[in-house]
Length: 267
Image (tube, rainbow, N blue to C red; front, side, top):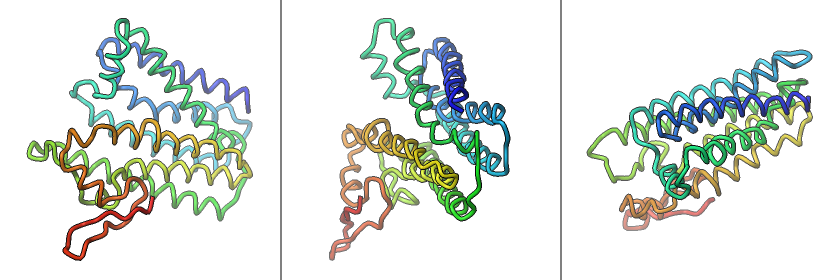
């Protein structure tokens, strides 16, 4: 299994290298966002093809990975199509010029592949050597499905909101965005804990490394922490929205006696 795991890194690095070449042509490294989930799907397919045997649980997890990966990649591709390079990457480009094109192979694409490979460890055991645990599987699929639905709704609502010129500079505070400032990241959080429960049902409790790393990334690194940075200067209404809406875990906004909304801290 561990030899196959090492091989999966090669799969991810090859995908990263090919996408890097395309990014040089486009002069846009934002396409790495669409690549992220596809790395997991490609590695999953490779591991299943190399596994000594497969069961219905192999197919279940592969299906879950495929649905999550394809939905996320397709959505990000559609959202970013025809748009300039994401401001996050523009800043990275400015901080690493000159010769950013060459440097981006390592600080963007290779780094993404290595992080994905570490997280992929949580999917590896069930894809390679599955055993059955029906009760946990049912719970796992339920949590995963809730995550996919929440992040899908969040992505669609934000995309539709941002497409209207009249909403430029405004803050989306309806739908799932009423209950958490980052419902898309919360949905991703649920997806990875659902994946973990599949592995835990097979006795691979050490696979908890995957949701723990993803939770760290979502809360402190490339998710909430990065998105919250400087957002009040770009959207004047965000301060009020932040005061009445939880950062990550969903909860109902609280209202003052005078009818104005006030934050409840349940994070």
